[in-house]
Image 1: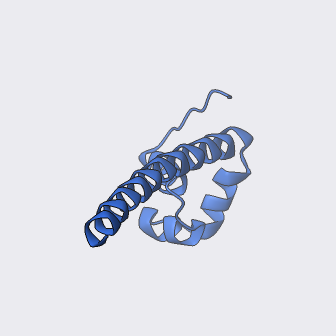
Image 2: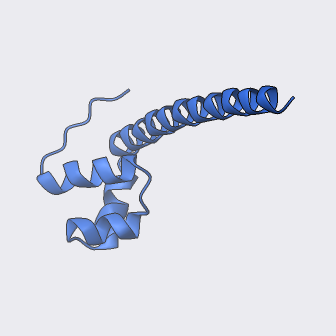
Length: 85
């Protein structure tokens, strides 16, 4: 991974929001900048790389959480089926 240096609070906020998967136009609005500014940030290889990594990490966390819910549902269904037999 490249060394990313964000220089402004706007860049930090944009990085955090983009990393969570928000649409660039929503991020622009939340940061109070134009969509073209977000596009400029994303055109920087180092910035885009960190955004992609943050999105991947968020996806991994969500997948782990989803699996926990699936396991809980499976356990509850098994108990319900056992009590009905």
